[in-house]
Amino acid sequence: MALPINDQLKYWGVAGAAFFVALWFMGDVLLPFVLGGAMAYFLDPVADRLERMGLSRAMATAVITVVALLIFVVMALLVVPTLIAQAANLVETAPELTRQLTVSLTERFPSLLEEGSTLRNSITSLGISVQERGGELLNTALSSAAGILNIIMLFVIVPVVAVYLLLDWDRMIATVDGLLPRDHAPTVRRLARDIDHTLASFIRGMGTVCLILGSYYALALMLVGLQFGLVVGFIAGLVTFIPYLGAMIGGMLAIGLALFQFWGDWVSIAMVASIFVIGQVVEGNVLTPKLVGNSVGLHPVWLIFSLSVFGALFGFIGLLVAVPVAASLGVIARFGVEQYHMSLLYRGTEQNYKAAQPGAKPDSVPDDKDVA
Image (cartoon, rainbow, N blue to C red; front, top):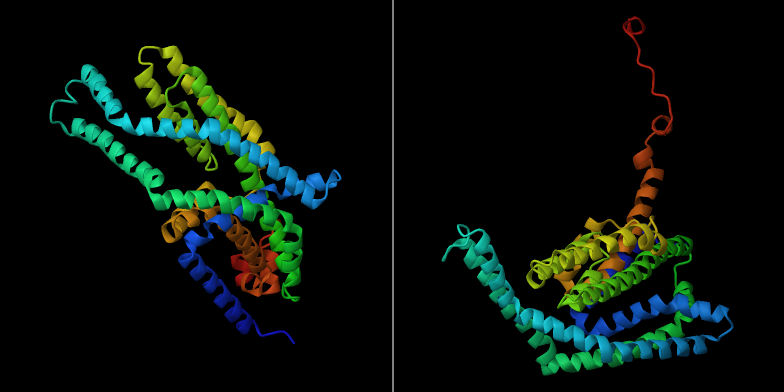
């Protein structure tokens, strides 16, 4: 005989609360394992395809590991140092950029930027704040001994966790499936398939879109000659998963920098703007429909809300799990709505339920004679 519903809710509620408490207290410790699990989940379809081509699981994992190691070495030698250098230079030159903006606006609108005016003081303080806060952030991330140790541990532990999880992925899924409560196993499997479809469509697909667009923006801006093109492309690609926000932030930053660097050279400024216009056209008409699809069901507002809540509650680890949790909650919410539509709470009497169905004829309204 199955446990009563109240007891089941009690047990699962305790398990859920324990999970969130563990996430709260062990956030920093769990970070390498969350990243490793995300990498294994992202690469599992590649391993499955290699297996279908005739390789064993161990050989497929070895091939993926070697290729990923080569890509990492190339990135570490060529891209990352340039990215860090450009980010540091951008932070250091922020006061100079604001000074140039002040001079330019003073020449064109002298009445708005008189000495001691509110707008002039705001622009000057903005540049100083960017330099101070940005410098503090870079110094904290790159100069702290604890930060360096954590970064080294991250680069050591994450690949090891990812390799082991990728090697045993199918076995782990089968083990978890064997632990499901038998009464609820079909429903849990269905929800898991829906969540996997949503995550695969969004995380794998949108991750590929972010990588493609970030590389395109960075290369195109550097070819045009924009001084901080790599940083701008990295930022724009990183936030592309929120529709229009990546292009808006990257475009405003790139065009703003282009106005300082190419003032008077309107062709170069127009080329910088056209890079983001082309990127948006390709992303909206080719990349997102092909790689993500139109039925993921993750609204941008829901994504922003999830990132804000989980980031505030759990810090950086919360930002990492925000999108998967948002996708899972979205699937569960749709399932709950479906169950609600089938329940007596929604349907009420059978007569009212049939009358509420699409295409049903409305009940006739009696006229005065019928009432009489």
